[in-house]
Image (cartoon, rainbow, N blue to C red; front, side, top):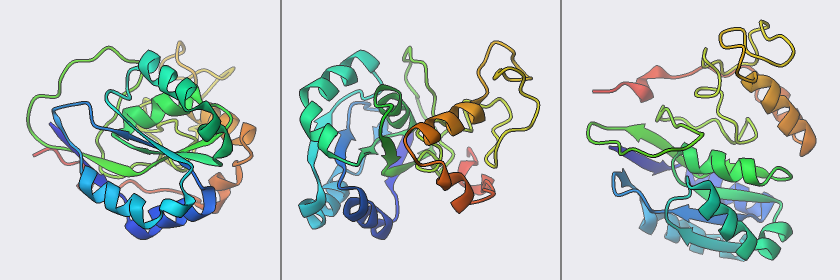
Length: 204
C-alpha cells in the first residue's frame, strides 16, 4: 500500500499563479490512498489560473497517458507547466512524454504496509515521502540513480553512463540536459544541495 499526500497548499497555489498549469489527477490504483476531495478544493481556490484538468486512471500507463495528452493537446500547449497529482511514477511518465515543459508533482508519496500491486513500467517510485521531481525535471534521482544522489552526479559517469551499471544512463546527466532544454537549469543552483530526510521513508 501507499498513500499520496498533497504538498504544501501555499506552494501549490504559488505554482498555479506562476505557471498557469494544466493539471492531471490520477486515481487508478486501488492500493493508493488519493486525497481527491482535498485536491479539488485546492484547485477550486486557484481555478482562475488553471488551463485545464484531466482526471484519469493509471497515469503510469504510458500509452494511455499519451492518448490523454493528445486529447488535451491545446490546453497543455497553452500552459507553462503541467501539475500532476499522483505518485512519483505518474509524474515521471508525463515528464517523459512532454519534453518541452516542466512537469511538477502535487503530491508526496509515502509507503505503508500492504499489497503494492504488480505493473510493468519503466519508472518506479521509492515512496520516500518527499518528492524532488519539481527540481529535477521530472526525472527521479532516487530511483534513476543507483546511489540515490540528491545533490548532483557522483563524478564517476563515463560517456553519459553510470559507473555502477554501465548500461544505464547517468540520471544526473539526464536531469541537467532536460532542465537545460526547457530553460530551467537555474533550479539546480537555486536550491543547492539537497539532504534526504530518511525519517519520511521508514517502512514500519
